[in-house]
Length: 114
Image (cartoon, rainbow, N blue to C red):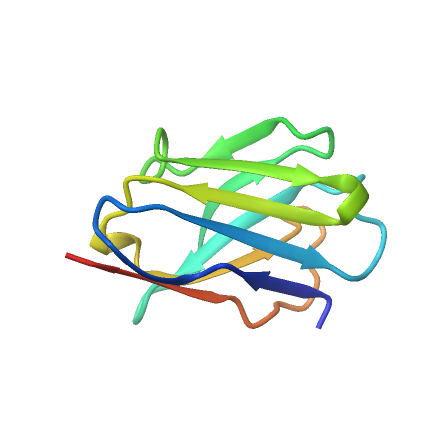
């Protein structure tokens, strides 16, 4: 598995989590990075993307202002800081490269209780 997401868990509404994604392949630093999520019974959707240089590139409307995306190129890692979590944020969260996707890893489960 080249993409390993971690940091998920159970949190109450209004709480925070920080997700990490470790990429074991190469190259990493030249790729646009992205976080996605898939809720039960729904299609996978984009959450946020980040440029190779580390600038947040886009956010889905449903997370704008609550989530931040970052990366550490020397560590081959992506991060997603999630604040003010809502029950509707409950999903499996994945990372990948939006412009050059590779096989999906298992993701990390985030459950937000009301």
